[in-house]
Length: 100
Length: 156
Image: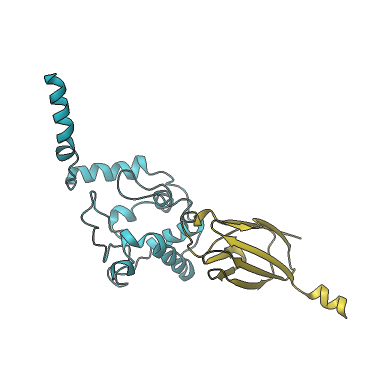
């Protein structure tokens, strides 16, 4: 039973946001695999949005937020910070690869 | 020696005479507007990858509120911007024909790179491409002038 539970459990991914980048800056997920994405900020408020995947999570100053999603498209998607955080905000990106 | 004194005097007077900012004349405005539309502002043919939907309009309105409202007002029509008509050239209404006649690609270009020597700065890197395209969508759906009040920064 424990094994079944482990197979169905969502994958946990931790991403740290800091002006003006994400760490890691690139992640790979499997299509159809549920994911818990935990977004942590070490400075100001940030967000992470993948428009094509309908994923948007925001995190307050120094806080932690979580979003659950299951990628249903394959390809490479560029996520952007979705909370204006200063002069380099527009270049704050995370590359997400979704594979079969 | 006398020649050097003349040059020094001219240099001292230059800021008072040569740097005075007057409103542009009608012909200056027409020539510059035409030059911008046809020569200086590029990217005319690029299409907006975002469709005009209530969601993208709302995205554009939000992105606009972070970076553009200080000069253009919440409504893009300078409402509540105290210096809008005192700049040379004045800050244009984004609902005006001069602005709306730009293609979507040109509006993206203007937001990316700004327009020198007006006060319009470039936002490339400060805003993401996605945000800038959403602003272009918002510019095509601006609310009535004055309907959103004035920027909060001028209310205090």
